[in-house]
View 1 (cartoon, helix red, strand yellow):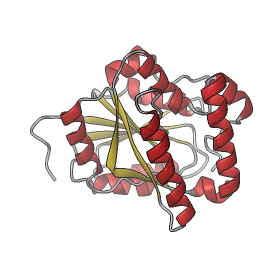
View 2 (cartoon, one colour):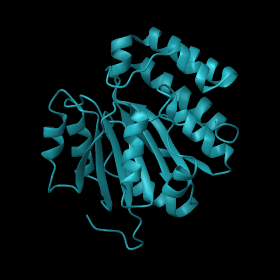
View 3 (cartoon, rainbow, N blue to C red):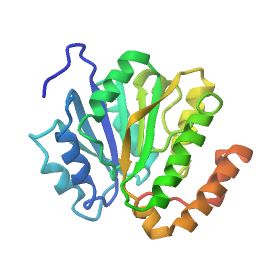
Length: 248
């Protein structure tokens, strides 16, 4: 594994809250990347479990550091990570994702080629269930791709953003605890920044939420949230959908 000649360097930011069962999987995947010109910033919300111990196991294997947030809030924690990032290319991952070994390399190639201000990737569930593959296959094609030019959206499992545009819109809105990821991409789009989608490889994510809520419950909630988001705005969405950080 070698550093790329063009010096495209990434700051990977991961907000955590009681993620001892998942953060090791993500960090292990980051040690296996074919492109490794990045730092990793884990911003923890005072976890009650062994999350920090898990992270510290990777010291020396990847460039990783831990920051503590006095507030348990994904948006606040992501913003802390961005403010402390050494590099201009920000990557936000949820703690329960598992990027394939070539993910960062493909991302670097995409950024060099099309120079987007922000982007996301197709969502690939780590599941053997056909319903999950069909559900997120439809989400990728009809929603992510379908809305790309009009009102782009991205889920927090993976968002790339250049630091200057991110800071110019004041990053994630800490008052928003549901759809804060979509709110960010919406504001970036409104400010005239470009957006793109990385189709291959997609970003693999845990289906723990679907397992806990049930597929029908998950679909119903997402449909309701989407309806409110597109008709009444993100504030109205937050009034009907409860905060979920650390819940799963």
